[in-house]
Length: 402
Image (cartoon, rainbow, N blue to C red; front, side, top):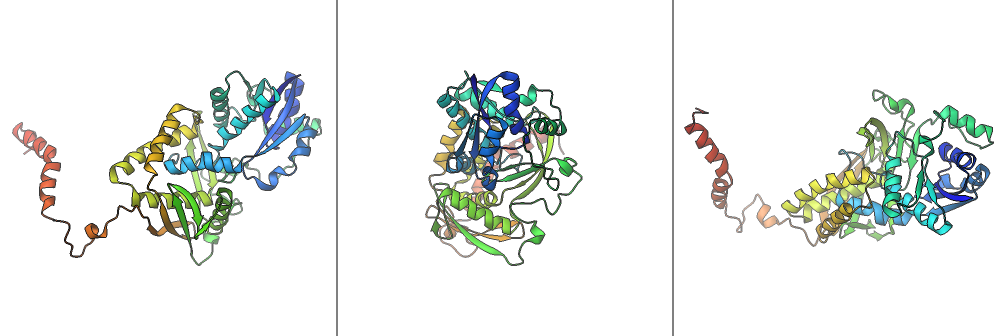
């Protein structure tokens, strides 16, 4: 039998995809679950995958690679999609697809498969990665092929084949979880007029339920990468897990937004990104201290394009690599420590230091100084505003203004 490698989560969609691939396309199905920090969700997968008809299951620990090779480059770039979304699902998919391709090579598979629907962004992210890494592999997307049209149809299909699918009636949301974030979509959230329910959040609490006393944390960076928390050096996974706990405790990182999907529709999602929000706030504060005006402003423009590339699944592309090269140069002096105040959903810088600080108190002071000559500003203003003056003179001469 031909082999196919399926990106497997153990949820409803990927569970029924296993028998569907066998029954309809005649594949031997090898399942691959990526451990990106889902925790207890991974424990029952091996038994469930085999019971669903998979020949074998790979559970791949990709947590550190996820942070160092995907999260950190995006953090250093300062990329945020549409001003709010910290791209938690977006940069997870290229990593999962990369491992799919690697296992396909290892197993001699001729195809890979995913459970993304035809309405979402994930299908694009998975398939662009496969195209970039091995275009000879066929990609099978059952949601674009089968006659299963709804979740109800999917439940009936699973039940008929004895596939256990637990139904959490109190949590009817479509969720994606990894070390970086947790997303919630569907159910009552499909109506943008509905406020998220108080019991929605799983990584933390609503800001109004957070402690009444603020908490301070200090993050240390080396060339744009976080390396210490409160003076203690931590490995990437431990650092992010610790920040998630701290941020969640104080209601940090909750985003409710209507975003523009790549496939043309708008969708409403609620994201929890507690540790990531803290890291972004600290990194941005340190850049403001260490980057010159021109570089900082140009980098902010680059961040918009970088966010689009990540959101659209164009990770393995020359442009993203070229942008990384630019970003890495800008990060050479982004080293230092940032203190932050966490309080009821807010993450506020509360002091920062760096050996490469461009802030010079001798020049910036409102007190008496001996280095800045205020009369120099007059000539600067005359030259800087000269184009405005010339245009005004022309308009007056031409009778366009009184």
